[in-house]
Length: 167
Image (cartoon, rainbow, N blue to C red):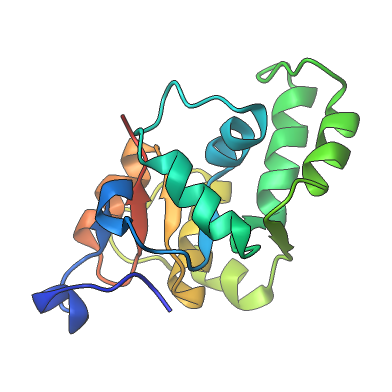
Protein backbone atom coordinates (compact mmCIF):
# COMPACT_ATOMS: atom_id res chain seq x y z
CA UNK A 1 0.00 0.00 0.00
CA UNK A 2 1.36 3.41 -0.89
CA UNK A 3 1.08 6.59 1.17
CA UNK A 4 -2.37 8.07 1.43
CA UNK A 5 -3.02 10.56 -1.31
CA UNK A 6 -5.64 13.26 -1.63
CA UNK A 7 -7.90 14.44 -4.41
CA UNK A 8 -6.75 13.64 -7.93
CA UNK A 9 -3.77 11.64 -6.66
CA UNK A 10 -6.04 9.27 -4.75
CA UNK A 11 -7.88 8.51 -7.99
CA UNK A 12 -4.59 7.86 -9.83
CA UNK A 13 -5.03 10.89 -12.08
CA UNK A 14 -1.91 12.76 -11.08
CA UNK A 15 1.76 11.88 -10.71
CA UNK A 16 2.85 11.08 -7.18
CA UNK A 17 5.85 12.88 -5.74
CA UNK A 18 6.01 13.30 -1.99
CA UNK A 19 8.50 14.89 0.35
CA UNK A 20 9.48 13.00 3.50
CA UNK A 21 7.47 15.56 5.47
CA UNK A 22 4.33 14.61 3.51
CA UNK A 23 4.70 11.08 4.91
CA UNK A 24 5.06 11.92 8.60
CA UNK A 25 3.07 8.87 9.72
CA UNK A 26 3.89 6.47 6.88
CA UNK A 27 5.70 3.28 7.87
CA UNK A 28 5.06 1.12 4.82
CA UNK A 29 7.53 -0.14 2.25
CA UNK A 30 10.03 2.18 0.59
CA UNK A 31 12.31 1.37 -2.32
CA UNK A 32 15.71 2.98 -1.82
CA UNK A 33 17.63 4.44 -4.74
CA UNK A 34 21.25 3.32 -4.69
CA UNK A 35 22.63 6.60 -3.33
CA UNK A 36 19.95 6.73 -0.60
CA UNK A 37 20.87 3.19 0.49
CA UNK A 38 24.56 4.12 0.54
CA UNK A 39 23.94 7.33 2.49
CA UNK A 40 21.61 5.53 4.91
CA UNK A 41 24.16 2.79 5.64
CA UNK A 42 26.96 5.36 5.98
CA UNK A 43 24.83 7.61 8.24
CA UNK A 44 25.28 10.50 5.79
CA UNK A 45 22.29 12.85 5.85
CA UNK A 46 24.08 15.92 4.48
CA UNK A 47 22.29 15.73 1.12
CA UNK A 48 18.79 14.80 2.29
CA UNK A 49 15.81 16.45 3.92
CA UNK A 50 15.75 16.39 7.73
CA UNK A 51 12.51 14.42 7.73
CA UNK A 52 14.03 11.56 5.73
CA UNK A 53 15.79 9.97 8.72
CA UNK A 54 12.60 9.48 10.75
CA UNK A 55 10.77 8.18 7.65
CA UNK A 56 13.49 5.58 6.99
CA UNK A 57 13.58 4.66 10.69
CA UNK A 58 9.80 4.05 10.77
CA UNK A 59 9.82 1.90 7.67
CA UNK A 60 13.01 0.15 8.73
CA UNK A 61 11.49 -0.80 12.08
CA UNK A 62 9.10 -3.01 10.08
CA UNK A 63 11.82 -4.28 7.71
CA UNK A 64 10.18 -2.23 4.97
CA UNK A 65 13.29 -0.73 3.38
CA UNK A 66 13.68 -2.40 0.01
CA UNK A 67 16.93 -2.47 -1.92
CA UNK A 68 16.94 -3.86 -5.43
CA UNK A 69 19.73 -6.20 -6.46
CA UNK A 70 20.50 -3.65 -9.19
CA UNK A 71 21.69 -1.28 -6.44
CA UNK A 72 24.01 -3.98 -5.08
CA UNK A 73 25.43 -4.34 -8.60
CA UNK A 74 25.62 -0.56 -9.11
CA UNK A 75 27.71 -0.05 -5.96
CA UNK A 76 30.07 -2.85 -7.00
CA UNK A 77 30.45 -1.39 -10.51
CA UNK A 78 31.06 2.16 -9.31
CA UNK A 79 33.67 0.96 -6.83
CA UNK A 80 35.39 -1.16 -9.51
CA UNK A 81 35.54 1.84 -11.87
CA UNK A 82 36.90 4.11 -9.14
CA UNK A 83 33.78 6.31 -9.17
CA UNK A 84 32.97 5.36 -5.57
CA UNK A 85 35.43 5.16 -2.72
CA UNK A 86 34.40 3.41 0.46
CA UNK A 87 36.29 3.27 3.75
CA UNK A 88 36.62 -0.52 3.35
CA UNK A 89 36.78 -2.94 0.43
CA UNK A 90 33.50 -2.96 -1.52
CA UNK A 91 32.98 -6.71 -0.96
CA UNK A 92 33.16 -6.22 2.81
CA UNK A 93 30.97 -3.11 2.63
CA UNK A 94 28.32 -4.97 0.64
CA UNK A 95 28.45 -7.95 2.99
CA UNK A 96 27.89 -5.67 5.99
CA UNK A 97 25.19 -3.68 4.17
CA UNK A 98 23.32 -6.92 3.53
CA UNK A 99 23.06 -7.40 7.29
CA UNK A 100 21.81 -3.88 8.06
CA UNK A 101 18.61 -3.89 10.09
CA UNK A 102 15.34 -3.02 8.40
CA UNK A 103 16.52 -3.75 4.87
CA UNK A 104 15.36 -6.52 2.59
CA UNK A 105 16.63 -7.16 -0.89
CA UNK A 106 14.51 -7.62 -3.99
CA UNK A 107 15.75 -9.80 -6.81
CA UNK A 108 15.61 -8.58 -10.38
CA UNK A 109 12.46 -9.87 -12.04
CA UNK A 110 11.81 -10.23 -15.76
CA UNK A 111 8.64 -8.06 -15.81
CA UNK A 112 10.62 -5.22 -14.19
CA UNK A 113 13.45 -5.62 -16.69
CA UNK A 114 10.98 -5.56 -19.58
CA UNK A 115 9.10 -2.51 -18.29
CA UNK A 116 12.39 -0.68 -17.80
CA UNK A 117 12.82 -0.78 -21.59
CA UNK A 118 9.30 0.52 -22.22
CA UNK A 119 8.89 3.41 -19.82
CA UNK A 120 6.69 6.11 -21.33
CA UNK A 121 7.87 9.66 -21.77
CA UNK A 122 11.47 10.73 -21.48
CA UNK A 123 12.67 8.41 -18.75
CA UNK A 124 16.16 8.44 -17.29
CA UNK A 125 18.85 7.01 -19.59
CA UNK A 126 20.70 5.17 -16.79
CA UNK A 127 19.68 1.49 -16.98
CA UNK A 128 19.83 1.00 -13.18
CA UNK A 129 17.59 4.03 -12.64
CA UNK A 130 15.16 2.79 -15.29
CA UNK A 131 14.99 -0.56 -13.46
CA UNK A 132 14.29 1.20 -10.15
CA UNK A 133 11.54 3.31 -11.77
CA UNK A 134 9.98 0.19 -13.29
CA UNK A 135 10.14 -1.65 -9.95
CA UNK A 136 8.49 1.30 -8.15
CA UNK A 137 5.72 1.29 -10.75
CA UNK A 138 5.06 -2.46 -10.77
CA UNK A 139 5.32 -2.89 -6.99
CA UNK A 140 3.52 0.42 -6.35
CA UNK A 141 6.15 1.26 -3.75
CA UNK A 142 7.58 4.77 -3.42
CA UNK A 143 11.14 5.14 -4.69
CA UNK A 144 13.15 7.31 -2.30
CA UNK A 145 15.62 9.35 -4.32
CA UNK A 146 17.50 12.62 -4.57
CA UNK A 147 18.00 12.14 -8.32
CA UNK A 148 16.56 15.21 -10.04
CA UNK A 149 15.88 13.35 -13.30
CA UNK A 150 13.88 10.61 -11.57
CA UNK A 151 11.90 13.19 -9.57
CA UNK A 152 11.13 15.20 -12.72
CA UNK A 153 10.06 12.02 -14.51
CA UNK A 154 7.73 11.03 -11.66
CA UNK A 155 6.20 14.51 -11.65
CA UNK A 156 5.14 14.06 -15.26
CA UNK A 157 4.32 10.35 -15.43
CA UNK A 158 1.32 8.92 -13.65
CA UNK A 159 2.03 5.75 -11.72
CA UNK A 160 5.60 6.47 -10.62
CA UNK A 161 5.52 6.88 -6.82
CA UNK A 162 8.56 8.85 -5.64
CA UNK A 163 9.74 10.42 -2.41
CA UNK A 164 11.86 13.50 -3.14
CA UNK A 165 14.59 13.17 -0.52
CA UNK A 166 16.48 16.33 -1.50
CA UNK A 167 17.32 18.93 1.09
